[in-house]
Every structure is written in structure tokens, then in C-alpha cells.
Image 1 (spheres, one colour):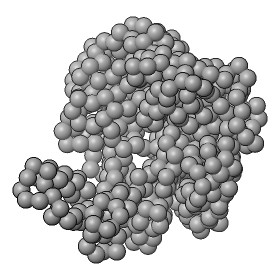
Image 2 (cartoon, rainbow, N blue to C red):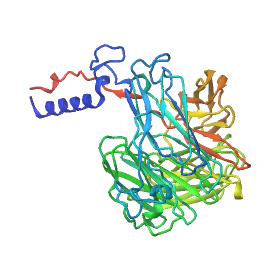
Image 3 (cartoon, rainbow, N blue to C red):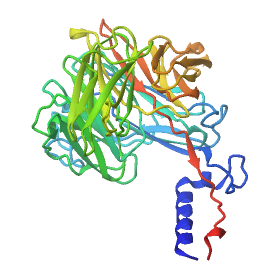
Amino acid sequence: MNRTTLSLLAAVTSLAAVTGFAALTAPDGGTATEATAPARLPVERSSLLCPAPATSDLAETVYTSYTPQSGAGGGSASSSGGSTAELRPAVATLRGPADDAGKAGEEKKDGKDEEEKDGSAKNPPSDKPVVSLEQPGKPVGAKASGSAAPALVGTATGSLAPGWTTQQTTTVSAGSGRGVLGVNCTAPDTDLWFPGASIAKDRQDYVHLTNPDDTGALVDIELYGKDGALKSQLSDGIQVPAGASVPVLLSTLTADPAEDVTVHVTTRTGRVGAAVRGAGDETGSDWLPASADPAGTLVLPGIPADATAVRLVAFAPGDDDAELKVRLASATGTINPAGAETLRVKSGMTASLDMKDVTKGEAGSLLLSPAEGAPASPVVAALQVTRGKGDKQEIAYIPATAPVTERATAADNRAKGSLLSLTAPGETAQVKVTASAGTEGGAQAVKTYTVKGGTTLAVSPPVPAGLKGSYALTVEPQSGGPVHAARTLLLPEDGIQMFTVQTLPDDRGLVAVPAAQQDLSVLGD
């Protein structure tokens, strides 16, 4: 057997080991042949990580967990059989500026954990699930109060794995961290970008690192301002113990203040889930999720119609500067915003663009692409969006997000206050939106929308008949060009325009599995 044959056999064996059972069967249950196209099969295991929700004793947190019914992603509508989907508490620790990650918080003052002074509670490990999903198509909810609610780690298997989604929504009625803090619990990763954080004097931004695995993870955090990399202290080799969550206050990592900062999280060993909690004295707080991977063209969907201020923050991680054309996809078409048509992002530096009230009463999405004649240099980007003014203002974040290729889901929607934004940056697209049953009752509802090319369609989504509790929205493109989606949740309180926006990237409930059996005779001996 020659070297070519050995190499191909090794590649096939490696692929089978990665994809497991799915790699060994065809879609109809028969044996795959060389004529069989790669199968699209449901994943059999998913992981989700939720950061510790709040630092305020006034915090009220709602978790909503959901797996879509069978269809684009498979799964049983009536029973999960031997499947499981559970989120359990993670051990929360704090890495302060003078402590090792594994030792932080061991000292106590006045009978309280040191972490509590810095805004994070230390919690013992627990085997009791906080959220436990029983069947596809039926969302479940759970609640937690106060600042002691821990970070969560969990897995879903079998029919509950494809498209498993959990939304964490926290309401804080007063204090510097007030607001609605919403985040989709995320899968672990090894390389994450967060443009849009801040270490200004009036900000208290944390990056939360959560390790789902049985072995420790070693994490590096890099900070980039408008002039390049910020000199960091104690940002290399941060230890995140097995099954633990480590919130790191960004201002402890550098002595250099910066209004706009890009945070880069990488792991040397292991993997982590990460999210940045941005909090300002006057602007309230919310979660900043990771941006889509660096690319020359990006879409940031779901800017509310009544946004009073929009700030774009971008970073170029490559060796080349990026010259970006900035366009707004509104309900009627795509325009170049006056005074904010372009943005230059120098290599290794964070750039920002104040777009003020760019939507002017009409919901929209931002489209970033190379300026005319410029190369497609990769960038990451996010928006800081403000509603309201003065002491009634509130912020939320919208990172660049990938299109929905098969299906995406937003959990924790309410009968009132949920808005869905669908953006078709290219060709016109048709999209099916399914409203699930409610956590406490209600019947599924389905509606199909047409999104014209180059526009954003902002709608009040369908609501389940007889809804009790909250529900999930599932978005499935049917035809036409790519679609990007976001969900806005409006929860005003005492005149403050509290809100949060979650983008809807594809749920990756299906995986392409090439045929495992190939005819290698043509390769010779």
C-alpha cells in the first residue's frame, strides 16, 4: 500500500472518530456509498455555558431552555427517550489583580467572601440541575433571585441536542448595574473577540470565563484600544478550574483607560465560554456576546427604531488596515448614513464611529463591506445601542452575526415586548417563523415572512394561542438569499427604556457527514 493510500485511510479514520455514529450511516439508515452526498444529520451532543447573571441583590433572573421540534434539525416532538438536557451550577471564583485564579476569594472580611466585594459570589459545586428540559418543542423555565445565582454549565444529548438553546434574562431595577441583561448561553470555544467593551472611568466591565470540562483551562486575555495593544498586567495564563467560572474585571488588567476596547480571549489549554458584562454609571448594563469570526463583510442586525444613539466599534486583527463602507438596511432599502459612510480600521487597533440616531424612527441593520477599491481585510465589530436619554437611558449590544443557514432560535419571548428583525443583505428571502408552546401552556403558531433584498423587516412575531409563560421563536429560511436575525426584548420599568438584543446565529443542529465507505482501489497497491 503506497503513501497516498495510507494518508487517505488515515483521514477517513480520523473523520469517523470525530463524527462518531453519524459518519457510519446514510440518511435512510443504509450504508453510505461513494455516490452518496454528505449527509446532514442531527448532532448528538450539545454544550451550553451561562455566566453568573448579576452582582445586585435586586436582580431577578429567568432561564428559558428549549430544543425545537423535529424538522430541519431532527428530534422527537413527543418524547426525548433517553435524551437529557440539564444546566447545573458552576463553581464561581474571582481572579483579582493580586490573586491567582485558583486562590482568589479564599480570604474573608466581615464574614463575607472577598468575591462579593468585587461583584461575584463564590458558590459550592452542586449536582442539582437549575434547568432541566424534558422534550423537544416544549420550553421550560426557571428563576433565580439576588446576586448569588451561579454560572451554569450543561449538556444535551440525543433528541434534545440539535438546536438546544437557553436564554438568561436578568432584570435589575436600580443601581449602577440596572437594566435588562440578556444573553444566549453559549457553546465553549478557544478563540473569541469582543469589540465594544470599555475601561473608561465610569465603566465596570467584566469578562466572564466558564470552563465546562473536567480539566482546568489556561486563558490569555488581550486588550486593544485606539492606539493598539494596551499594556496588560496579569492577563496571561489565567487559570479557570474545571467546572468553574472566573469573572475578570478588565480595569485590573491595565493601567491605561480607554473608552472603546476590543477584548481577545484565547485558550492555551482547554476551552471556555465567554461573555463581557458592560456596566456604566449612567447607561445601565447588558451582556456583550462574541462577534462573528473576522471577515471582510459583516452584518449587525436588529437596531431598534427608537435608538437615540448608535456607536460602531470595529477591530482589524490581521496585518492589513481595513477600509469599510458602512450602510444601513432599513425597511425600505439600503442607504449610506450621512456623515457615517465609511470607517477606517488600522491593523491591530480599535476604531469607533458615533452614528447618533441613525435609524431615525425606522428599525434597521448595519452592513459592513470593503470600501470601493479596498481589499476585503478581516474585521470584527459590534454596536452599542442606546434607548432613552439622561437618567432614563439604557444600553444593549449587537455583535456582528453569521447568517441563519438552517435554523436559529431565541428563547424567552413574552406576549408583549418581543420584536424580531430579519435582514436580507442580498437577494429577497422567505423565512418561516415558529412560535413554540409556552412554558406554562399554549399552542404553537407559524408564520412566513418575505424579506426584500437589501432591507430589514422588523415585526411583532407570532404569539402562541392561549400563551401562558414565555415561549421560543425559531427562524428557518425557506428560499432566496442569506438571512441574518435578531430578537429585541423590551421590558421598560419606571420610565427607563430597559431592553436587550440577542442575535440569532445558526444553531448548528445539523452536521455534514461525508460517506465513510469509499472505493480506494484506484489508488493502487
